[in-house]
Amino acid sequence: MTVKIKYFTDNQEKLARYGKALSHPVRVFILDYLANNINKCCYSGDMAEELPIARSTLSEHLKELKKAGLIQGEINPPYIKYCINRENWLEAKNTMNQFFDLKI
Image 1 (cartoon, rainbow, N blue to C red):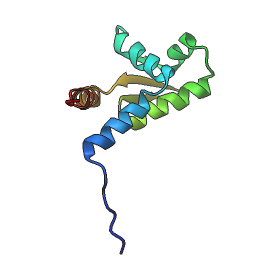
Image 2: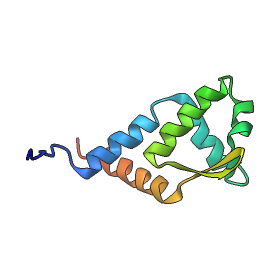
Image 3: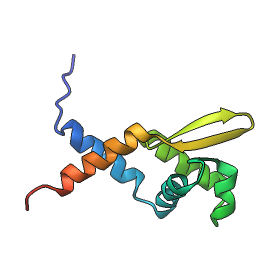
């Protein structure tokens, strides 16, 4: 049996996961779009009309944001409605604030 040594704290791993999710302007656009949408949720097709990218590319970006836990999707075939995951959004905000508040 191999024992896996953990080198990084939970907060470091969370910060890296959220940072990766925010590392592309399309993903930042998606989060901004959802956060500023009157209904706070929308279908991927609505976002596709706002971006000059293929739907398949949009789908990959949505997948990354969902993987990071920043958004959640509700399936109503054949559509998927996306919303900000408020709990994880606040966690990401707090984790990043803690990191940027480090004394340098």
